[in-house]
Image (cartoon, rainbow, N blue to C red):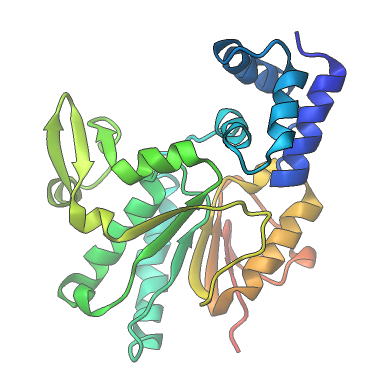
Length: 270
């Protein structure tokens, strides 16, 4: 049984280091960590947290994040965003960036890879024969090394890729048996997976045209959320688009982003 002091210690550490508020998630914290502690020979939550705090960049700290973060996603999730990207955003960017032929898109909570792979397929489908003359690689980041390892392999069950258009399934995936399909090299090569903590300073050299930040800010307190949004705003090109989860909303008085339509925002055009 997790004690109040042990639970508060975990909540404080996770919020301080990752911005994630678990104060109302006691059952989740205890349930997920209890099995992990038992399997790895820890006698208490405090013993485990002492190991985590001793080396914040070590394996146990990474495992804490892997165990506690929820990673639920699927191909074509919230498809209204992909429709808007294809029909509105990409035609604009194709014209605006015609000289440089450089599009920078960030999937900021990429989980097991379905979102960035979907974005890559949309881009390849949109540009068609012109695709090779454009740099459209997707940056996909997540805090969890476990889901990034899964995403990099690009192997999904048959039912997982079922929401995709038939021509995409045929063109971008290969049947590897046992009801499993693997993303082909031409798709994998379009996505760059990196581990990144959204609470850290943004390390990017160039600004983004599009950022997908979906269904992750629900774990952040308002101050943390709006601080992150401002940092992302500063790292976006003028007129760049931000997509958040369809169940999420922003207080427009607290963000520099301009409202476009539900869950879609834009940086002001100069």
